[in-house]
Structures are given as C-alpha cells and as structure tokens.
Length: 334
Length: 243
Image (cartoon, rainbow over all chains, first blue to last red; front, top):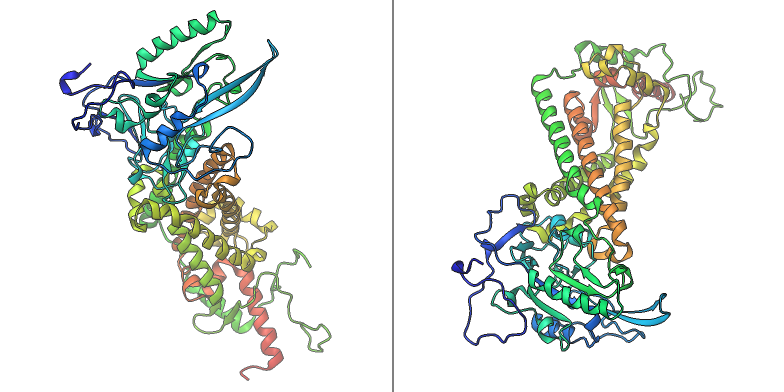
C-alpha cells in the first residue's frame, strides 16, 4: 500500500527476521483509536490490516504457542497444579496471554467423541469493547493495521476493560495493577515479523498475514474441511464487533459455543454501551445544569431570610410560652 | 419523666426534639440543633462525598480525567476512591443512626409538598408548621440513604483489587452502570442540599456552630421550636428559675 511512507504490515510469520536493527513501524501516526481521547488526530497513513488465523482443525494441542508467547513477552506464569485437565495454566492470566482450551465433545450426529482445542486470547476486535470502556487516556490504542494494544504506563488498573470485553480476555496484575492481554506481538509486527505463536506453531494451525490473505487462506481450509464431511465448517470473524483480527477456522462454525464457550454472536454489552453513552451524556448534562442553575438562582434570586419579627416571635415564645400545644396532637407513634 | 410527679404539667413527650436539642433565651434566641458528634460526622461524610465525586467523575468522563492529578495520578485515584467510599459509608451510617427517627415521614409532609410553590417562593407564612425537618430535607436524607446503600453495594462488586473474582462479569457490568447512575443522582442531591442550605439563610451555622437563631427555627421548624420551648419551661419549673 503506502510503501512510500515506510514499510507496510508484514505478510507472514514464517520468514526469518533480518539481522540488522530496524526502526519500529508502528507509531503515534498509526493510531485510529485511543482510549478516553476524543481529539485524536487522523492517522498519517493506512497500514494494511493484518490478522492471525487459527485453524482449530489443524491444532494438535502442543502448547508451543503458549511457550513462544511466554518467551517472547518475557512473562513468568506461576508453576501450576495438575487438577486433571489439560489446560495449563487453568485460565488466562496477566502472565499468560494465550491459552489452549480443551473440550471433549460428543458429536450427536455421529455419536463420536471430538477433542476440540481452541487457542484462546485477545481477538483484536475492530470495535474493541475494552477500549470503549477504558477511562484512562491512551491506556488502550488501536492501530490502523487492526492491532488493539494496552499501553501499560497509562493503565490505572480499574478493570473497566474487563467489563467492556465480550470475550473475557484482559487480566489485571495483582503485582502492578495493570491490565494485560495478547498484543498480537505488536512489537514484532512493528519490525516486519509475525506473532511469536504463529512463528512457533509446528502444524501451521496458526498463520499470520494480511486480513484479506487470511480470509482467502481460510476459504481453502473450509473447502477442504467440507470435502471431508464437516459440512458446517466456516470462518469465525464475528460481525457484532466489526470483525476481528484474530479469526478461527471452525469445523463446527454453526456451534462456536462448543469450543470452550466461544460466543455465538459477540458484541459490546448494551450495559457497557449505555454506561459509556447515554448515562455519561445525560448525567453530565443533569449535574452541570443543576449546578449552573443553582449558581444563577443564588446570584439573581431572592434569598430566604429570617425577619426581625420572626426573631421576636421566637423570643416571646421562649420567654412567655404559648398556649398552642407543643406538639402535633396526631401522634406518630408511642 | 415520671408521671407520678405532683407538679401540674408533666414533662411533654418529645416528638421532634432529639437528644441535645435545646433553646437558650436571649436576643436572638439560640437553638442547639446539632451536637459536636453529629457535626463531625456530617463533615467527614461531606468531605468524603466531595472527594468521591471528584475522583469518580475523573473516571466517569475523559474530559475530567485531569482531576486524577489531585490524587496523584490515575493509579492512586483508582486505589483511593473505594477506600474513601468505605469512610463515607461508615460515617454516614453513624449519621443515619443519629438522624433517621426525626426524618420519618408525616402527614404534614404531603401538605408541605403540595405547597411547593410557596416553598420555592419563600412564603413560609403559607406553609404548615413543621418539626425538625421538612419534606425536602427528608427527601435528601432518604435519597442519600438509598443511594449510598446502592453505591457501596455496587462499588464492592467493581472493586477490582479485592472483590473482582467474587462476581461474574455480567453482574459487574450491571454494577458499574448502576454505580454511575446512582453517583450522578447523589451528586444532584448533593447540589440541591448545598444550595438549599445556602439559599435558606441562617442554615449553615447549624453545621458549623451547631446552633440556629430562634427566628430561623420559628420560620422553618416551628413545631420543633415549640417543643423545645415547652421542654425548657418544664425544666425551669422543676429546678426553679435561675438556680
């Protein structure tokens, strides 16, 4: 695309990196969204949108992607405990940005057991709920290539992104109170490399490239699966969040839920939408109108003052008493 | 107290007067309205509410995010806000115990509300005689009670640092929405409360010095004043004047 302004998005995760140092190709001019920022200047160029495609039918559950993720991102997940399931660790954590989720599913059509393995992690939504919910300016950004990234020095650890995310992905660190998730290896993409997980995958169940190329690649895979009897094979690129930059090829695309609860039709919750939309605007308007109205009435209105006569009435009452009963005859309670 | 006392009028049963309320003759008459503990509690609650509003608004709308600087940045604001909420909840709870009885609704509150035009116009002469609180003050009291309960309950649910894992994400989404709506409402009630206290001249000193003038009590809370005057007469009769 706009090669004149420098290198564009990488096309693959397979090639080896050049050995000479490279400048980062993802900068402030590539932002298309920035959390809690309304005056973001338009991006200086449009990078080609990228995507990671995860073909669950080719995944062998080796967890090489998890190891590569830990190694590249230099995280240290705690040593786990075996409770008799394959997931390790048991959930995504601030130190584990991607997780193989294993499901034993009996296909009612064939009565055979299918072992479903889905690599869970951030989907890099085109319409990111985390970014919408985030109150801290610049803590979550979206690049024109589609990557949604957390900028940790701006993160305040409030957990709003957790509520905004339709996929239950962000995790808040108990150590530094900042939110963590898959970056789509934005630091690798910035220097022409694909994500570490895609690079490490031994079966190429994880591939990386432009979103367009990945959709084409998925078409071929889906045709192959259909020819093998998976009539419902399809691409998971949910339109409810504007599409995603991490996509799945599913052999049962009509039932995404069976893959460890992959949402059927994810979108930003209406609760989050109204919290960040109508509540904010109506609330701010109500509070400021009341405050301004009070000041105006206070300055121009007539104050409620006690008169001299009322002070005298009170003095008379206290000095001489009055004949009125001291309290309401309609007693409230014993 | 004891009804077996031989002296004619027994001490009048108190309906509006709260412990510590009293009249002091003079020009003008001085009426004790809030004791030191109630005032202390009030100002702890007020201070916490202001800090909560400022820190909460900073996280509510990006245009006010700069307010986090007052707390030493976003991380500190996020960490402090819930603890200030706990302080407010505790201090308001004590305040509640001190005030709730005098804020129970009465029939006269309906009459007062039906004459809201005279209230806003400052025509106290058209309004019924009232006890220690009018319907507006009671509305503010019970509004605060309800919203503070709602805010502490939803606030705990979204207190990421300690309670995030106890509540599911769908519930936390409800909580964060309810928390922000309740916060908007309590800020509106807070503005009304402050404005009414300033507009009704002679009110602020009830929460600073703890006293109001007799004329203020006569104008706004006459039944309460009558009761206190009666109480004083009963006491001076018992002990003898100017002992």
